[in-house]
Length: 106
View 1 (cartoon, one colour):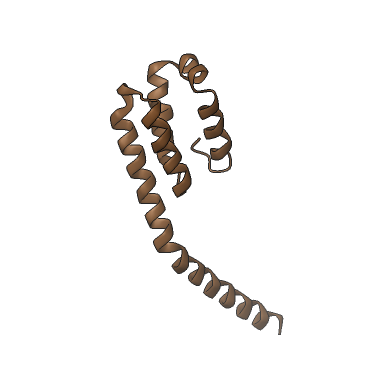
View 2: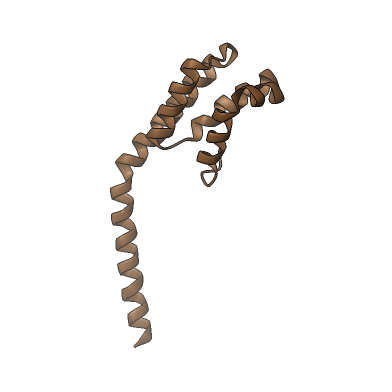
């Protein structure tokens, strides 16, 4: 679930097969699974995690869940604050690269 390319698919799998997953991985790995949700950087996934674990409690992972939700919130906040700045900077770099390329072609 820490790989952004497969997060949604993995999270959907975990939710739909929760009892099987929990039984298969054991208590310690269930805690690690909860921790892995901290890599979610989309508000809808964070909300799903919060809702899911409200009704599927893992008492041994309460602290891990709090930390995962906090990490997710930080990532979402940073992403929302920096996306515009990054897009602008990348646009400027592209414009600079295009000028450099045009100058070298002459």
